[in-house]
Length: 78
Picture 1 (cartoon, rainbow, N blue to C red):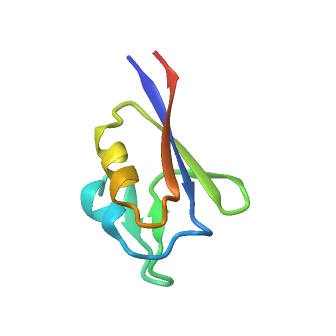
Picture 2: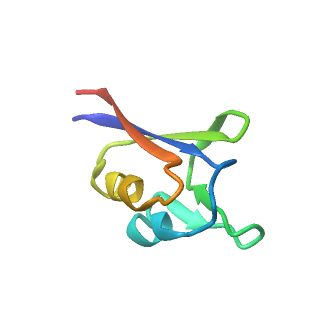
């Protein structure tokens, strides 16, 4: 099964929220600052969060609706 990685730049997030609306399995809005949190993600460098996933459909929708273009999805394994 294919594996993918969500890469999310939380630092540059503008707190618009559409990522959590289209992909609530991977993103949720943090009530403290209004920015999205990557559920289960790990901070790999300051402000950059990553999460391995098996299905990229909803994550790719989050990429498309993000007004700040701070989310990307990369295939890491076939």
